[in-house]
Each structure stands twice: as C-alpha cells, then as structure tokens.
Amino acid sequence: MTRGLFSSLRARMALLLAVAVLVTAASTLALVFGLGAANAQLDRLVSAQSRLELLSAISGRIGDYALVALQAGHEDPAAGQAPMHAGRFAAADRARAAFARLEDALATEVGRLSGEEQRTLMAARSRTLARMRAQFDVLDRQIDTALAAEEPATAVRVALDVFAAGFSGPLGQAMEEERIAAHDAQAAVRDLRERTIRWGLIGVALACLIAVVLYHRLGRSLVNRVADVAAAAAAIARGRSDTRIAVTGHDELSLAMARFNRMAAHLARREGRLVAAQKQLQETVDARTAELRAANTRLENVDLARRRFFTDVSHELRTPLTVILGEAEITLRPAQPREEDLRAALLTIQSRARRLHRRVEDLLRIARSESGQIELDRSFFLVCDLITDLRESMQPVARAAGLTLETACMPDDLVIDADRDWLRQTFDGLIANAVRHSPPGETVRVEAAREAGDVVIRVSDHGTGIPSDDLPHVFERFWRGAAREGTGFGIGLALAKWIVDRHGGRIEIDSRVADGEGRRGGTCVTVRLPTPVPDITLEAAQ
Image (cartoon, rainbow, N blue to C red; front, side):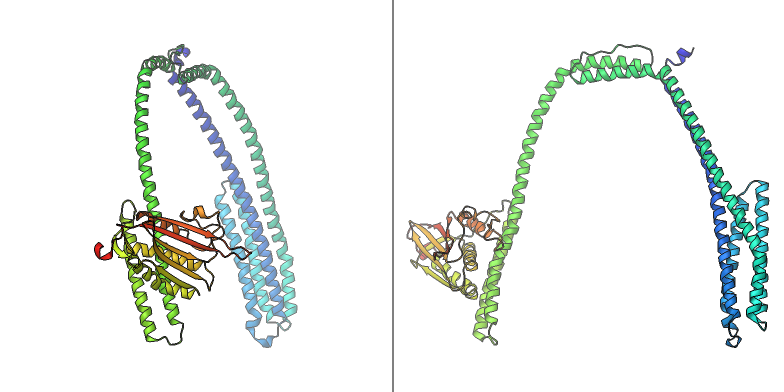
C-alpha cells in the first residue's frame, strides 16, 4: 500500500511539501518563542539599567540642591529673599522631576510583570522610593527653616548632614537592587542563548536526517529520471532528433517522458519543413535589413543637412555683422561725428542689414528643403558691379584692421549668370579671411578678369599663409589646422566651395608661409565661374 501511495509524483511532492511545512512551522515557533523570551529578558535588562541611571540622576540632582542650599546659607540676608531662594527652588524642582521619572519607570515595570513575587519586589522598591522622596521633602522644609535662622549657614549644614545620614542607606539599597536585577537579566539572556544554540543544533541535525531519508526514499529515482530527460533534451538541442528515453514507472514524470519521445518523433518530421521556413525567413530578414539600411542612410543625410544648416547659419551671419559693427565703430571714433559720416554709416548698416535679412531667408529656405541644397536665384549682372559692392562693404573692415583694400576688374563689361547675393556673401567671407590673417599695413587685393573663357575672381593677401600640410584639408568642414587653431569655425572655405560648385565653377587656393629669410607669406584664392555665352553683354542678357 505504501508503494502504491508513493507511486504518484503528486503524492511524493505533497509529502515533501508537508514535511517542509512542518519543519518550517516548528522552526518558526521555536524562533518566535526564543525571540519572545530574549526580548522579555532584554526589556528587564534595559529597564533595570534605566532605573539605575535615574537613581544616579536623583543623587546628582540632590547634590546640586545641597550645593545651592549651602550657597543660599552664606548669602547676605540684606540682599532679599529672591536671590537666596530662586536657585534652590529650581534645584528642588529638578530633583522632584527625577523622582517622578523613576516612579513612572517603576509603575511601567510593575504593569509589565506577570509573577506575583516579582510584583511584590517592585512594590517594595516603590515604597523605598516613596520614603526617599519624603526624606527630600522634609529636607526642603528644614532648609526653609534653617535659612530663616540667625546662623543660616550652620543650620543648613546640620540639616544636610542629618539628611545624608538617613538618605544614603535607602539610595544605596535601591541602586544595589537595580544592579542585581540587571545582573539577573544578563544571566537569563546568556542561559537563553545557550539553550537556543543547543536546541538549534539538535533541530538542524534532525532536519538533515529527515532530508536524507526522504531523498533516499522519494527523491533519488526522481532526480535520476529528470537527469535522463535533461540529457535527452541536450542531445536533441545538438541536432540528434532520433534520441529516445527509456520510460520506467507509472507516475506523471513517466507520462511526460513518453510524451517527450513522441515530441522527438514530431521534431524529426518537422525538421525539413523548419529548414525551408528558415530559408524563407532569412530572405525576408535580408530584405528588411536592406530597407532599414536605406532608411538609416536617409536619416543620416537628414542629420547631416541639419548640422550643416546650423554651422552655415553661424558663418553666414558673422561677416555681415562684422561689417555693421566695423562701420559703427569707425563712425563713432571721433568725439562728434559729422552728419554726412553718420548718414553714410547708417546707409551702409541699412544695406548690410537688408542683405543679412535676405541671407537669413535663404538659410531658412535651405533648412526647409528636403535635400538641404542651395536654391540659386540666377540673373545676369556685371562682374565689376559685384567688385564695387565688395569694395564698399569690406572697406570699413579692412580700414579698421589697418589694411588697404584694392580692387580691379578687366574688362568692364564682363557679364556672369549667377546668384549675385550668394556670390557676394562668398567673397565677403574670403575677404574677411584675408583681412583676419594679414598684419597691419599690408594690402588685400580683389581682381576679376576673363581667362580661357571663364570669369576668374582672385582674392590675394600677404598674410601669415597656410602650411603646405594643411592645404589639402582647407575645404573640409571644421578643419582649422594646428597653426590656425582658434581663428574661426572651419566652415568658411567649405561653404564657399559648396556655393561655387553649385554654380558649376571651381575654387582653388595657393598659399605660402613666411620664413625667417625674408620671403613674404601670402594666400591667393581663385574662383573660376563659367560665362553664359561668349562675349554676351548685359543689355543682351536682359
């Protein structure tokens, strides 16, 4: 019958669970009992130590009272009663408060005790405390009488001596009783700890014995069969779908093992279909991956356009603002500027502000466009007019830096089909670079000419020059080079190349660095733009 009872896996698990619950419940009850007993003894110990501290506090308060009373006995009666009695009254109140705290502690301890004998002992301590308090009250009245005598110091000392002779005995007895109570509580805690350790070890040994017996009777066969199932599952995971388990027993695990064998057979039949499905899934994944990569590329292009927009904004706004500030500074240098100078400066600032407004609109149009490319507003205009505009707008900047700006345009009727505002902004930046990197007293030259059917505009200076190692990188965004660190954002030449490329032209740069042997440095930027039709005139273009 026992074998039939334990042939079911559920019955075995229920038995194991019942044993575990019983062991846990017994351990919990023992722990709760032990903790309760330990807590009770600790409460006794803490209470006894607290009462001992209160007795020490009472002794200290009475000592303070005695000191104040002696001082009051030596005071001059002519000073009045308030100086003699105020300190003594405060010391008496503190002593009575200490007595009250000790009485509360004793009342709390009596309420917590359960044995009649212990309550009787605590009641005896309460009577001792009451007698001590009554002795202090008698002392206080005697001190009042002594302070009114002819020799208050002597009377106070006699009253204190009489009080000390009668008070020290009960106080010492009460403190000794509390020490004994604390010692008894400590001994009880140690005894409880030893018993807890002893019974705990016995309980651990008994639990281990029960676990060994249950394992040999119930768990070993179960563990072995579970290990067989794990080994078979690992074999199937390695691709051996022909693995089978030897079924023994008639419990639920045996039924699961039989189902495992049927599952292995189904896996063998489905393996072929799984390979085909996996191939199809791989093709789908490859297609989706290609789509994701294309989408990621589009996102990268959008992000690149966004970053390019912000960097171009900072660069495009810098040159017009520099011209406006330079014009204002030059005009305001005299103590009282002339009216015609102020008007000329305001006209220049107005013109630059309008162009700056147009440039902001262009940049916003670029930002709104999907590709982030420049939208050119082409028109036919004279190159010499462009050179004149450049001279007028950048002359204040060059003059503020102590430089001379020279311009030249040959022939006068040279026509180009381009976006005038973008080109003017590009050459403003090139001239600003030349001014920034040229020492005072030098000359910045801007000249336009026709060469091999192209319109060629050059901006040259005799400044610091660009090292040969940096020349291949000057048109890269954010490239400034080690020798030019801190002179700009590294996007001016990159933006200029971008604009020239959009016009179908090309930009070149030639530079040399000054050395200590007398050779001057300098940089020449050449922009080549195609002419619309050979020998076209402005009137014909319009």
